[in-house]
Length: 74
Image 1 (cartoon, rainbow, N blue to C red):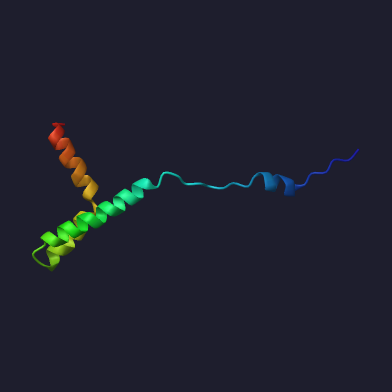
Image 2 (spheres, one colour; image 1 turned 30 degrees about the vertical axis):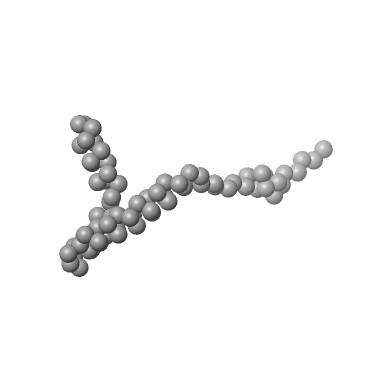
């Protein structure tokens, strides 16, 4: 009686694929970034205020959470 072991069959059963789901928050952040950038750049009086507006647009969720917690009295 002989026993054969093949690594090919074990490789085919160990095929792993990674599926990422729930990417809706990326779209919300992206649209929020565009909206915040348009708002802050529109309010800017000069070039450097526009640059600051773009930086503020990147971190707009932090401003949102800060104001929400401030209004909730936390």
